[in-house]
Image 1: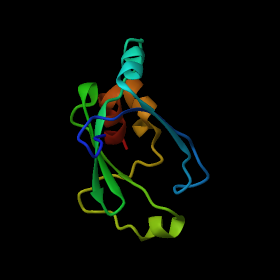
Image 2 (image 1 turned 90 degrees about the vertical axis):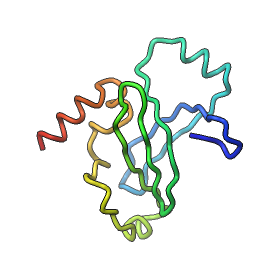
Image 3 (image 1 turned 135 degrees about the horizontal axis):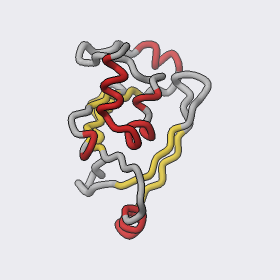
Image 4 (image 1 turned 135 degrees about the vertical axis):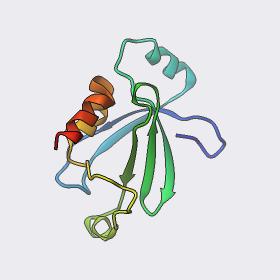
Length: 122
């Protein structure tokens, strides 16, 4: 993610299962350069992406590294009614909200090729 001043923002994020599509608790911890450097030195399954806000409740995640080529759209809304009113754009090819193959942890550990094989086998 890029801050308004153009600098890169590094964060640790965790999304939790909720009680419905519009109820997904999440935690973000924003890191300074020293914190990021300390964590980056540890062995880990890493997921790197750039998020682009495109309006209308949509953000586009463009993945890098081992997941290069994977692009996901994410929708956010304040409540169920607003979420239900969002029309799926024609450029979205699959709804993967409930598909654990697209969870951040799954993507980081198993990679995109495992995910792509999963989708193609549907």
